[in-house]
Length: 482
Image 1: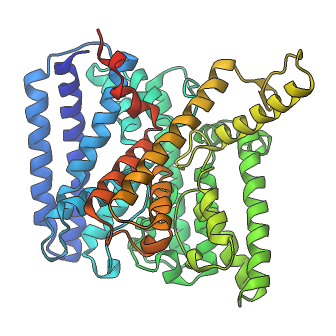
Image 2: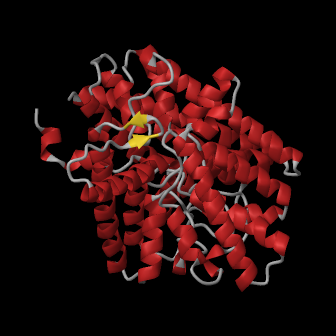
């Protein structure tokens, strides 16, 4: 492991990230909100730090190994979250404390969507835009974008790619070359974003709201330019557009690549993971709709409309809202919140444990039941027509065990700061699943939580975004041995 090589890459990536502060500067000048100076200072600090890290080590060239990729991915997301918070601390009257700024920055980059800010409607346009842009950049992962660029500068990318792509089947590639794979993913991502923005504008949004919401919709982030989220527009058409693009973004991007290449959509219905997600959402929507009709004042059409949107939004870990589902009757808030633990498909921008892992856990559970009946039988786990290697099946159980253990530890940690059990449980679950909305005292916003609780939740967001093992491996002695 070469320290100079790692500093070179981090410095280069930081200088690249500094360019993302140029659009907010332009937005500030366009709307004359006076925030261009704060973003200019943040840009200068970021590019300066990147240059200090890069220039002395610019000639350090070495092929990256998988172990290096783990360290760089974790360091890059951590460094990015910290430097991404700079503009939020420099915006004058609307400036956040260091803790709140870091929380908001990590929430954006990890596409969690939890916020400590109240009065979002009153924020300067540049700040509103910047929050949305953070989610868009984090959606597919700036690391994947860097993988498409860094090989031209002499840095290999497979190790980074394997640590960034979510889900248990990380070694599958869409194209023979990793650079082309990353570019294909971003072409699809950008196309979906532009299409979503145009659809929002056609439905009645102005260009600024349409751009901001297209960023957070395709990224499955949940940040909005309004306190009332999507409910601000009170438009069934906008809600359907949002839910549609959330569902598209919750599917694996490899399916979108196949759809583009083969000009067909049939494989969406043939893919076991996508099919499971569609059936799961349909059943959950039916349960929620019937429950609202029987236990609330919603009219038939309004109940179906709100049930469908909230189910898709929460289950895909977006967190947009048209109603406060935490106040819904009976077990509905808990049921919807638990759906976020499933999350999106592997290779999507969604959070959660990923649908493929849930499928494998269910199938392995069924296999163990069959083994009790037929002790001598050789039973393989299949997803569709494909037999799952035993190593992947074991890795899924390992992931689930680590997930539960870390969830418990962080839950105890947040409760130790004085937060009540419901709020602690829901905020940790929301953070580690990159969902955003929570129950209890954090149902409106996270601003009133203790500072230590916010730092624990930042760690939970990072663990969720990098899928736990990428971070946990750094804390093992074996990782640091030569």
